[in-house]
Length: 340
Ligand code: GYE
Image (cartoon, rainbow, N blue to C red; front, side):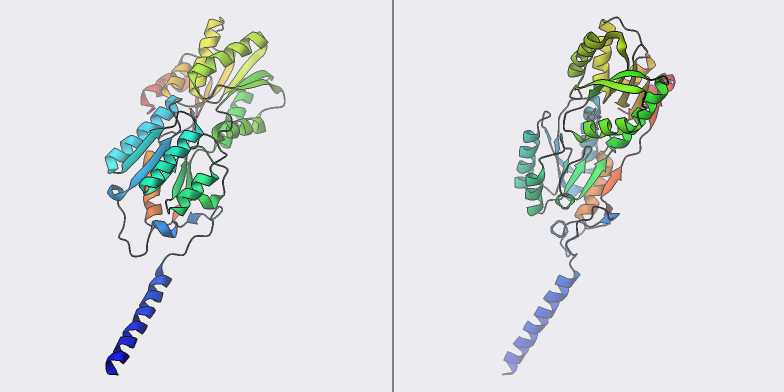
């Protein structure tokens, strides 16, 4: 009888302890799109787990490609930071194809990585694979470009505000062409957050007396930037007073076409984006007038963010990088100090 009573006391005690533990566990976060601080998904940080360190972390980085100097610097930033901190990095190169990024993510999910950092080549079409990661308890940080997906499907975004970059570019074009005129646009990869945002911001600030007479994609590469500018020059000749070019690599390709057509630096006023060494050199040579900076060195911040997410610490859902605007007159002086 007595034994039975003790047994039932113990059972009661166990139930109480179990419910206490359940209460102490972090609540599943409400989708925190507009909340300043967010909490990690419960699955990522069991209450009793000891603090995760960089050495415990496996980060999947399904890089979108190697299309530009920006991208090369971004890849290097992730690889160097992982090496320095002791993070295991599973890196792949999707060659600008979304389906490759999706299969790389699926393979990472299967391997049971701690976290995925995704630089999405385009904005649409991520819901299914993001849901799969969520179901597997693997948090996803969107890096660099944005996605159009329910915010509850990913933990955070870190990168640039592409609309603001476009707005800055528009303001600079207005200064370069105070009397207005016709301009062309070489845009980035169709459907990418970088191209859509820059195009939108640019149009927001562009003065009424400046007309965009044509806009074509050069897919963010030198190789494709050149023929696009060639075609523009053939079609519009000296009508073109300015060009908004969505990255330095395409600008460098476009400049080759301009040289081949016998143009001189400054004949077409160029506003470019990224602020790579190549862009700075083209500014120093007088071909690019203004370069709107876009920072690719996202490795350190992303890994720190990942650690906070995995440890269930409060973190910012949106981290924007600080970026400047650079002008041709200072380019030669600043070039040696550029990190990418
Ligand atoms: O501007 C371009 C690269 O997504 C911000 O992608 C990035 C862009 C960058 O190819 O050079």
